[in-house]
Image (cartoon, rainbow, N blue to C red):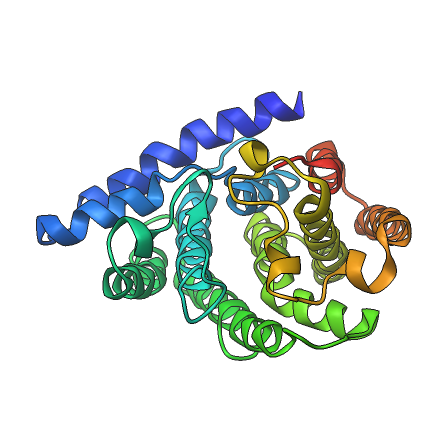
Length: 292
């Protein structure tokens, strides 16, 4: 059931995000790598999380959540493009294809990333489905999650952690910022736009915090024992760069135990929200058991 749900949402998101980019008045040599970036695959899990959170409160119509969901995926795509750059993680492959800087060049990758980030806010601000107050909330949440106090700080700390021996708490801090912020904000925005009460938003925000940790821990596990064809990039790249990861700090067995603990904590926060949205729990399992 959850795989069918994910596929349905992907089929909804993919043509919309491509259409948004195709509609832009751009030089063809700029539009081509932009389309390459948004067509590069990916599971679209963050916008799907946002939509599932929204549907916990508004199951009949998802029109209001579409533009924030597209904006979130644009921000996520920008972050991957920049994360792969030579000055960052220097990866040649993403989702089984050449990264933007390898398929084109560094300057193009930087500009496409910058463009997707800023266009995301344009998509929200001009939405005809959101009230002015809702737009302000969404823009504030997205900019905070992706900005200096969120994803940027996380990326900086992650780069600084190379060749360092970090503790579990330090790892958690890095990944709550770098990876977790966009996952948390997906759930939080979905709940807010759906009409959740403040206590429900708070509980689901905590659910998102644990979900972000689960996602990153599984990411680290896959870098140790994943399959290159499944994850779309070489296995062992973190070890090659001497990054601090959960398996490196805790060992693989303890890492799996910590992941299970965070999944249990996420389930408790879901229960605290007093909602009936099994999709969120199924997505928690997907995050914790994915192979790609």
